[in-house]
Length: 431
Image (tube, rainbow, N blue to C red; front, top):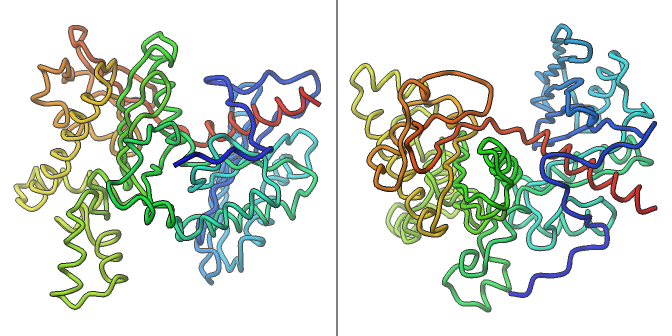
């Protein structure tokens, strides 16, 4: 499939690790918005140093029990504030966010605000870079709704609301799929009829790309090398989980596919499964397509195996001798090992395996079990280093290990802010 040319609003790739240097007096603040179907997460950052000025969450939008949690961080931080009560829609939610920011002297009308950066889950093949949003971009994001029905509509709502509040301000979309558009065709295509695949845009897109981009680059920094010099296997292990093979800063394979269902065992998603399971259930269990969708996305994975999707609770149950929890853990780790081995083969040479996200950053037993038995591949963890808790990126493998095992806390908001700011700064420099 020939990749369409990006729109004229697609900007250059930001320099690794930072946005463009701000000019004297230029605005340097970036508001990052992540709009879900019934929630808005936000952070306000200053790109002079990447520091956070405020962050918060609005949840249960459209319900009587809506909740806003706002934490000011300017000047060393302040008291967290919570508000409860009905918030009718995303427009009301963003207005409430604007009021909280204004109360801290950080209002959306501030001349120091340079851009609003939006997380958009699916950009298809069209959007390979952060992109300034205009009507054409909105139309293309909407055209992709059939392949991201749970996410793109909510992302669009957040964008349109923010644009109505600040129509004069650049708004930038940063796409979860963008980092994975460098996959070669032999990794991205499914082995199905080409005409059918092309007609319905069926291929592997991958997700969590903003996290994989950030973590692969931070892993290179941790090793004291440029991203172009390093091959990394990134394991993003949260309630949703994905793996990627990154060669010299470019993704060459990833575990999620057309949707976030493919790949690793997750909190509630099955990951890889024989496609014929779907047909079997529809024919023999009188399940509809919707029933199977709910089964595989919401009643499978760890919660389907043992009733829990919290790794801390699963480990507690294992310590108490719970056989179902132990089996769920073993299945989870077995899938991880398979992907580590597969991506080792894809890359040919691996410099590091990086664990990130909630489980990856905090569950030492998962890291230990995932590389156990892979010593011949140069992988091992140091028990003491692996057990240590830290918010910093760190190596947890012994000095003799040929391949570094790293724990790298992800920071998708900072990555979105960097990419958004670099784009608008570059465009301002060209003006």
